[in-house]
Structures are given as C-alpha cells and as structure tokens.
Image (cartoon, rainbow over all chains, first blue to last red; front, side, top):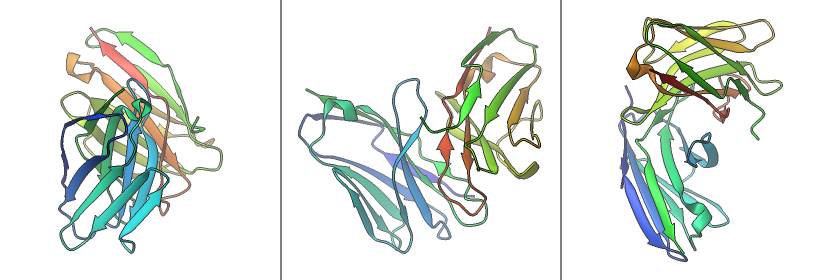
Length: 112
Length: 113
C-alpha cells in the first residue's frame, strides 16, 4: 500500500518568514495530493490540493509543488502569521476510491 | 463549517462498553468516510460507505463496525472498548467515490477510562 513520509515533524519560524513542509510517497499511481490544516482539537481543513497533471499550484500565501519523478510534494507558506500555527498534514490518494494515506503531520509554530 | 455534522462531541465511557458515533454528511454527498486520530497512530482511515454500501476498509478493528442508512447518515459502532480506543473519530464526506475532495466533520472525542 501507499506510504507517506512527512518532514519535519516540528517547524518553528518567526512571523514573516517562509515555511516549507515536505512529503514523499511510495505509490507511483497516486494522483491526488491534498494538504490539511488542523488547529488544536478541531477538524482537518483542506487548504490546498494538487493533481498529478500539475506541477505547481498557488493560492495567495500558500503554494504546493509536485515532483512526480521523485515522488515528492511540498507545501510552501510565505509571510507566515501567528494564525498559521497549526498541524499540517499531507496526503496521497489515487483514483477509484481516493482513500487518502496521511503523513504524520508537521506542527508549525509561528512566533510573533 | 464544512456542512458535515457529528454527534456527540465528547464521549466518556468505561472499558468493555459499547458506543455509537453518528455522522451526517454534507447535503448531496453520497460517500462517507470514518477516520481515527490518535497521538501515536496519526490520522488513520477506518472505513468508507457509498450510498448505503461498504466501499473500502482500512485499519478497522473487528470490534468496530459501521453502516450508512437510507437517509445517508452513518454510524460507527465501537464495542468491547479498550483504553487504546481513546481517540478523536472524524467523519468526512464527498460527493461520490470519484470526487477526491473530502470535507471533515468536527469529530467526536472518545475517552475510555
């Protein structure tokens, strides 16, 4: 089955800095890669996703890149703000049932 | 608010007991997914239902079962509870099985004492 590795497990940055979270996946058939943000005790919220026919996608301060050859994808957050502090999960899934396999999560801490 | 609702929000029970968690998907969504989130195991897929039928199974224990009713709400039944079953249980829904995007409910926090 699919295996998703996510790094780092914790990321501490100063407000205004950029943050990068990286994930690798094992199943070359995976073609959908969502990113979720989860605040403490709350539900995971989809913040951005990318499909395998696209190499990069951007939404305001958030961007995701995908390298299918290397089987890795990354989340980039620019101009971080304290409200960006949360746990971020990457996931990989493929057509059929689109059941996602999640990474273990990255705890992002943005210091004011 | 994702439009997915879950009840109860919190549940405290004892080992050996049985509980039922309930989920109502977004209006129009036919597919429901159940996930367990614990500190040591992360976010794990349990089971998926589509329009009343089981579609996929993940790491679901035999003590756990689920169903989806004609009105599309779903219930997750957890029996013979153990301390290790304490976790957050999320339900998510999507339009159908071909739709990648899933919307998560607020979760049920289960504490087994």
